[in-house]
Image (spheres, protein in one colour):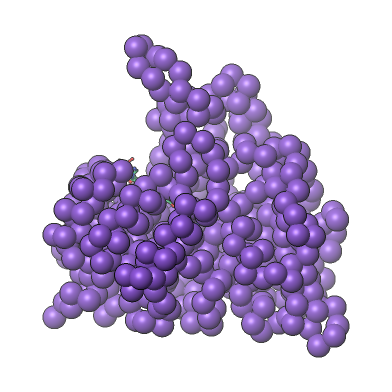
Length: 406
Ligand code: NDP
């Protein structure tokens, strides 16, 4: 018998929505009823039909529209929403959750459509309202943000008395065979990597010109890859939640062909979010670019190679200097065989499913608005191993980060 308590509403039917829906469908004891809603109904239907057995119900919603969301939530009566639409919809969905008494989880911080920010302020401002309503919102429960925060919490709990230096290293060594494509929503991805670089040092944010700082990092089972210093949203909550950190940085790999294409697109104005008049209509060049680029979900079929993402940490344990590296490698082709997705969607969708599972099971449950590192990492780390994202750790071993620039 399907319990009303176990009903889950997934919003967003892109690359990540596909993985969340399929992974939830594998766990009928946890996720009794699954409703998948998105702007384009046919995308929900394609996922539901791939899963089969009527396991997934589908609905259409414009998640920019609070009254529409309320109508949907009142009809479905879910325990919680897993928001894997776009960061633009975070606030409207949180608002509707408050009105309908529904818990909330997402994988990316709210972004205003007309300005790139990558900050939690808008969502943290919901803290009191969620707490007063006895509702929980879990923010940034993908891989990065998400597992990188859980890796950090695991390191703090089990391996350090004080963490001092954190480097998050994110490598996609996969090849999808396309001239230029982004692995998740192109608008958000291009906004993220073309912004000013930022890292935390001695209590202050330091800035760098976009993609101006880079160096080679040796990734497990992948090898040396040029890695670029970027600002990434989890840094904001990690430096608050682990105040002993003297420095926190984020590095991501890009190949020369990708950077070349990005440079050209930037130079001709195609990555701008400033609206321009086109055929009597205001359009954002970046939104138009998204429309001509491949959908992230469509890259999956012939994608080969691996992602390798982890946290390299230095600090003190029992009065001694300690080095620690915790990471996951995920294979694109294996993700495709399992759930018809590429590894970027897989490494985001699996943690979102796990976060929802822990909330449903009351293992991670506290009214208010939280980032993942504020919970006990142990059940999450165990679930990563059980649900397809096995992790490895190297304690006091030789680490690539020892060579990272200071
Ligand atoms: P996609 O672009 O593939 O999918 C986005 C989905 O959201 C589409 O189905 C889209 O519908 C739907 N959507 C967009 N606007 C609305 C709206 N107004 N109402 C209802 N549905 C809407 O993106 P991904 O699946 O790759 O990414 C999903 C989320 O995951 C993003 O927020 C992204 O930033 C985040 N992410 C997080 C990562 C992490 O590690 N934390 C890594 C990768 C992604 P339509 O098809 O009609 O456009």
